[in-house]
Length: 77
Image (cartoon, rainbow, N blue to C red):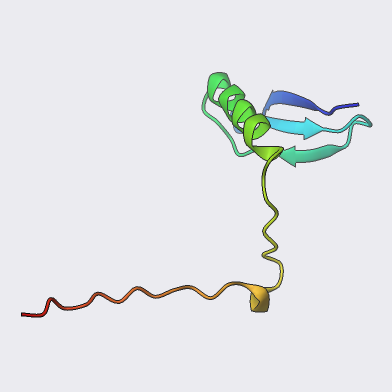
């Protein structure tokens, strides 16, 4: 059975959504949005992108790919 998205208002009156599993457990809670339409648009984006999303493990800092530093070269005459 698939989970459900629920749109709700938090204590600060912002709209948020949460993804709830079939047992009622909260899997994800969103950031706050100023209006309900923006929260619904974010749900659509999650639905479109999450199924094909890659997992990037950022839990071990030593396993991270080192940042590449770009150096500008001087123009040669």
